[in-house]
Amino acid sequence: MKTIATLIFVLFIGAIAQAQTANPTVRADVVEMTGSVESISEEVTLESITEVARLYKRTGTRVKKELTFSTKADRAKTV
Image (tube, rainbow, N blue to C red; front, side):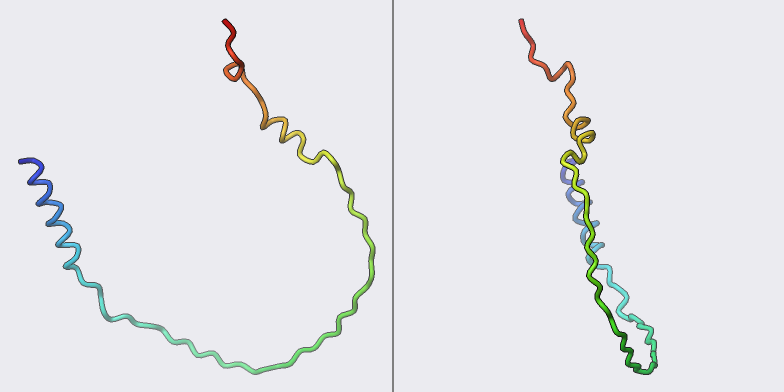
């Protein structure tokens, strides 16, 4: 009996949800923008600058060490 009442309740709620109609009148605000077209031209000069970047072999070693920690629970139990 409880199952049948629950099923009827769910179907009733579903029917009510589908019977709801959305508001069909949607208003859109129109904004007019006027402007002028201007042409902007700039000269770009390229300079050849050579820079050296330092490379370190061991970046983030402290992070890797902290992420690979082990606990007593990780060790194998010997009998």
